[in-house]
Length: 246
Length: 246
DNA sequence: CGACGAGTTGAGCACGTTCAAATCGAGTGG
DNA sequence: CCACTCGATTTGAACGTGCTCAACTCGTCG
Image (cartoon, rainbow over all chains, first blue to last red; front, side):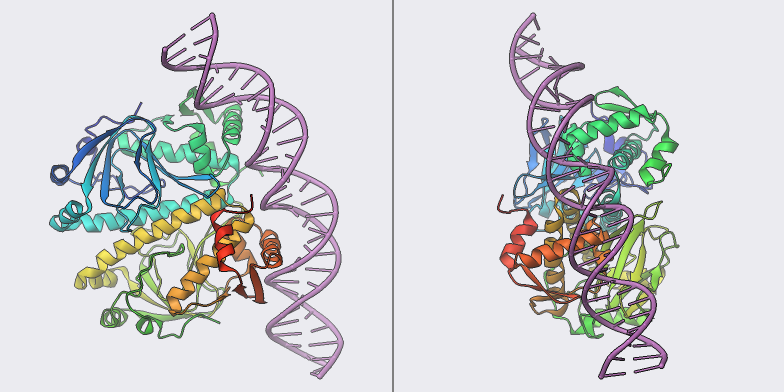
C-alpha cells in the first residue's frame, strides 16, 4: 500500500511550499519542472526493491545518489550493542545520499515494494552543473531538512511517549498530504511498530500502549493495523505541542 | 574564556576537513580564503553581546544572517509548558540564520561575551552571487550539519545518560580542535549544567551525577567547574559509542 | 486448520526525574 | 582580608515514566 502512483514525480502539483517537512534525507521537492526531472531520469537507472531489502549499508562507499519514485524506505543507524535509531522515513520524491561524505553514515532499507532511480556521483554532479537552479534548490531543501531534524531533537529530548506518537502521526499526515496533494484523515503506516518505536526513541510495547491511550481518548482510530484515522486533529496538535490539561 | 582570539576567521588554518562536525547551525568553515571573508565583512555590521543576551527569538522575522567571530551561543526551542531543548551550540566561525524560512524557528542566546557580524538577507544573497563557490560550500556544510543532527538523534533516542555525557565531551573536544587548530585534553564548557542537560535531553541533576560517575571511573577530571580534562580518550570513545563492559 | 510473526497486554523493575537539602564559588561590602 | 549573599552545582531520597520480560491475541499464509 504505497502512497502514490509511480508517476509521482511528474504528476505532483508544482510549487508546494514544503513548510513543515518531517525529518528525512535531502529531498528535491515538487518544485522541479517535469523537463528537468526527465533530464535527470535520462542519466540514471531504475532499481526495484522488495520489503526488507537494503539500498545500502552504513559504511558502504557513497558512490550513488538515489531518488525514490515508489514505495517507502527507512533510514537507521546502529549502536555497538544493537540498539537502533531510525532517523527518518522516505517517500516518493525524496532524494538520498547527497551528503558529500566518502561513506554512507546510515543504512537504508525498503519498507515495502519500492522503486528508485540511481545516479553515479559524477552523473549527478553533471546534472547539477547543467541545471544551476538545482544547487540552490538542494541547498534550500537541506536547510528544511535541518529544521525538521531540530524538531525531531525536541521530540526525542523532551516529549513524553504520548506526545511523540501524536507528533509522529501529524508529521506523517502532513507529509502524505504533500506527496498526494490531498488532505486525508487516514494516515498509512508502512512501517512496523518496532520501526516507529526506534524512530521515536521508545520500545514497541510503549508505542502499542500509547496508541491504545490516544484511541481511548478519542483522538485517533485504528482503521486497520497499518492505518490510523485522525479523529480530532486540533486536540492531537495540542498533545503534540506539549500543551495538555496540566 | 572564549576559545579563540577575535581574529579567528582569518587566523584559522585553511582547509580543515570538517569531517566530524558536532551539531550546530550552518557553518562556513575554515575553507574560505581570507579575501572572501574580507569581502563578506565589508557587507556586514559588527554586534557585541553579553552573556544571556539574545541574538533573536523563535518567531522573529528572519531578516538577517549572522557569523559568529568571538564567544559562543546556544540555540534552543521551547515547548508549551516551558520544557526546553537546546539543539546546538555555536562557536567562532559558525554561521546562523541561513535557513530560508520566513521566521527563525529557534531562539539564540549568548553564553558569554560574544561578537558577531550580521548581514541583511539581500546583502548575503549578493555576496553569494558574487562568490559562486560559496553556494556549493553552504550546501556542503548543511549536509554536514544534517549528518551531525542524525548523530544527535541517535544520542537522544538511544543512548544512556553516561553515554550522552561522554559523546558530548568528545564532540566538544573535536570542535575546539577544529576552531583552535590544536589538540587539547582540556575541554571548555562555556554553558551551564542546565544548558548541557537541555542539550542532552536530561536534567541538570543527572548531568551532575554522570559527571561524577565518569570522574570516578577515571575517564575525565574536572579541572575547574567549567573545564573538563579527558584522561582516557579511548575508553571515553567506547562509552560514547555504546560499547561497555556489558 | 495450524503455525508463525507481529502486535497487544500485564506485572515488576530500573533509569532518570523530582523535590529538597547541602555545598561550592564568585562577587560584594564591611 | 574575611564575612556574607546569591546563584549554580552537587548530593540524597522517594517517585514515576517507560523498559523488560513474559504471556496472550490477532492476522496471514501455508
